[in-house]
Length: 186
Image (cartoon, rainbow, N blue to C red):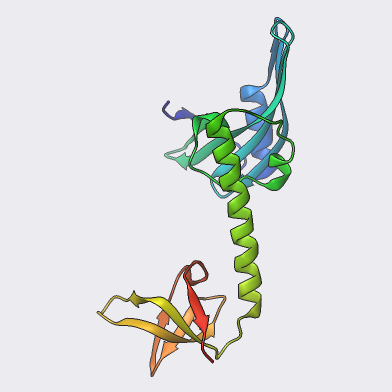
């Protein structure tokens, strides 16, 4: 249930993680076999499509494993969780999700659904962001509270890539503004 720490330092990229976790998790013994068939990475999250067969119990399935990773104090730490453990990481690449076999596990079903929702949300954000132009005035559903005490709901977009806005002569950075509800007023 905790984290595993090792002094080995795999490369912090997709190939390095794939090589490391294949060595850690793949096995074949007594009619049972676990093979990692695909790997995806999002920040410190690694997603594995694991194909498991058990000839003795007639099991042949592909499920997802989520691995949280961290590099600290000269060590590599990781925490692996099967999708049916209800992990709270929802950035699994579609290429992994598409390889999974059907399941009846309610936690795995819920986890998969949240990942598909995340993909849809990211697609909508990208679409919205594409439509925004510098100089547009946005009115947010809820006022935004800034350090210094200002509370504003209407701001002029200066630089969408840097999340930079202006109000009168003051400039504000609104991180994550694409996740907020707003309308374009002008």
